[in-house]
Image (cartoon, rainbow, N blue to C red):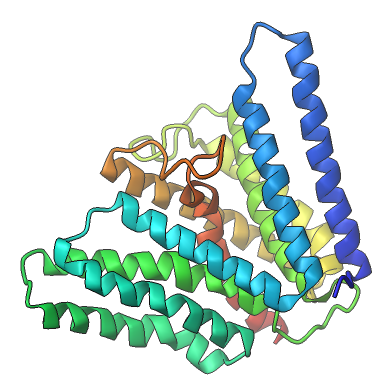
Length: 310
């Protein structure tokens, strides 16, 4: 408890330093340009302070606390998903089983039972949910409803639970520990979002998928990819068991997967004709708005790491 390996500690200090810089930048901007409204920037920075503080405290306390945190995040994400996607009245009894799979999936992660962890939701829950729907006897809208149920559980529970499993992998970089893997994944994912936004604002002209996400440009995407892969090559060997070449490839995979996750969730919101998935996080929207990239990067990074190092 409260034992933080050296490299992970340095990474956490660096992240806190970035938050301090962002907070000071917001104050300075408000003084220099008082005519502009920086409330959203302040809200976003304040929310990041809360999110990072909770994450770092849980990581410092220990494995079980961190796994419970991500299980709770999966619960909130699944609840938010069901709140924005219309479901049938009859499916309320089926939704219970979707929620029930959260503690089971994270239990398998906690004990390192890889065999069941990797098939429990894609196989057993995939088969259980439609079976329960059939028992209810409601066939109208059956295919659409089954797709929503499966999609919701896969995104919010199965994909995110890969973060928890990182904590039970054998430690091969003792200077970073298991927490180094989580810090690297989340840092690379969020840094990718920020980098793509900045490069897009500075040089973005040509749109990638204007019908889905009008603000996404080729300059933003490529700038983010180059920035994150370069940063990953330096940071990866400090926080993971990957050498710089494999860390660079990990950064490339994370940046591409993060972009895909972002636009996929954007497509869901456009289909539902909503701007944000919720209002849980001030300045960011809903929890799905904040997790969109991480939902895709988590399983992709996990299986790449598992193949390369384990």
